[in-house]
Each structure stands twice: as C-alpha cells, then as structure tokens.
Image (cartoon, rainbow, N blue to C red):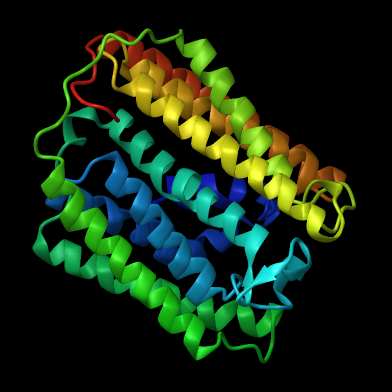
Length: 325
C-alpha cells in the first residue's frame, strides 16, 4: 500500500518529493486499489495475464473516471500530444495505461511478494478485510475526482458515452482477468529449456525498454508532442512505443517460462524498469535544482533498498520459480 504510490508517483518525479504529504491522498486509490486487485487475483487463481488486464482496469478507473485525463481536452495539455480519436487522448492513453499496468500494479505486487515470499501465493485478507479494502478504494476514486479535476480542469465532466464505454471495458476486462483466464489456465504449461540471460542483462534490457517507451511517448525538453514530432507524425512514435512494449512483454514471457528463471531474474527485471523510470523522471519531470537533487537522492535510496532485497533473495531463495511470473 505504501510502495504503490511511491513507485508510481514519487520515484518518477511527477509528484515532487517536497510534496510527499500527498501520499495521504494517493494511498486510498493507489494503495487500497492495488491491494484489492492483488486480493482478487489471488482468490480467483489468476496469473500474470490477469494482473496485466487488471492493471489496465486500474488505469481506466484512475485516468478515465477519476482524473478524466483520457478524454479531457484541457487537463495537463495532454490533448496536444497526438491526434485525438473518438475524443480519446491517444498518446496519453497509450502511455498511462501501460504505465499503470507496470508501475502502479505489477511492480508493487511483485516487490511485496519478493519481500514476503511465504505469503506470495495466497491472499492477505479475510472477507471483511476485502470488503473494507474495496470500500476505501472506491472512496479513493471519489477523493481523487473531487480534488484534482476541479482545480486542474474546472468545469469539465467526462461525456456520458465515454463514461459508459470505460465502464463496459472495465467489466469485460475484469471478467476476463478474474474468471476466464484463471479457468483457462488451470492446466499450466510446463517450464521450458529456453536460455535465460544473467540478471544483469535482464535488468539492462528492461531498463532500455522502459527508457525507449517513455521517451517515445512523453513530451520532454520543451516538446509539445511525442518524440518532438508535429502533426500526424506523432503516430510514428506511438507505433514504435507499442512495438517496444510488445517485444519487451513477449521476451519476458519467454524468459519467465524457462526453468532457469529465478526470483533474482524477476527482481532484476523490476530493478531495471525502476532505475530507468527514475532516470527518465530526472530528465523530464524535474523543473528545479532542488527537485532534481531530491529525486536523485530518492533514486539512490531506492537502488540501495533494491540491492539489499537482491542480497536477501540470493541468500534465502535459490530455488527456481515453479510457473511463469
């Protein structure tokens, strides 16, 4: 619950470290929301595919319903990043839905499972705890909706058609993630003999993929559109970013299915993505020297903690993972 807002907001620099008190605003939607997702996945027997789909669900709830950023023509100036399609801010949607899948949902859950390996395969909560978590998560959505859009985008309300569309997609993805995929995945494939590179190579590959994906979509350095493009040329970096995401996902899926894939490889993948996204934040999201120094210090602390976790995983868990993660 604490890792999620720290990873998603503060280690990227979108929320300056000097405003760390905002974690009180973020914990209900980020912390309780992702805890709810983890509990539902563990209770229904879902796997990595379920986690990815529920990450999209989380992104649609936060960005589409709470912040209204997927459709707003004014919020954060994201409408000018790329051509809008059916009222959707396309580049912003591609960037943020993928970002939430990886950094808001998957990485915090994986880190918690690595820190507490004995609890990794089962739910944390009883029934009353699950109901309470869902209630606070819903409150978090309402809190974010009531606090940010009225200040950043006063007067805008997401169109009814878009809202119904978001709700329909959320229902379909949730049903697929929590019912269809677990049902279809009961007969899991056997581990393969695919060669797996060293954890250092895995971390480097994930870091490069993260930098490429974010650099292609997120305008920085004074740019108003993705990758310093103009007009419809913005579609080019959008396609390239999608190709990077698909290639990275397919590669990780193949590696993680191998018998040689261990928890150290999993942590290396997480570490590479986290370090790269903080480095990108230093370039794109710090606007004062103080913010840059604070984010750099936070990045160093993050690296130290990840190194300590790597040593703990190496010393206490030499076994291989029994199924793809």
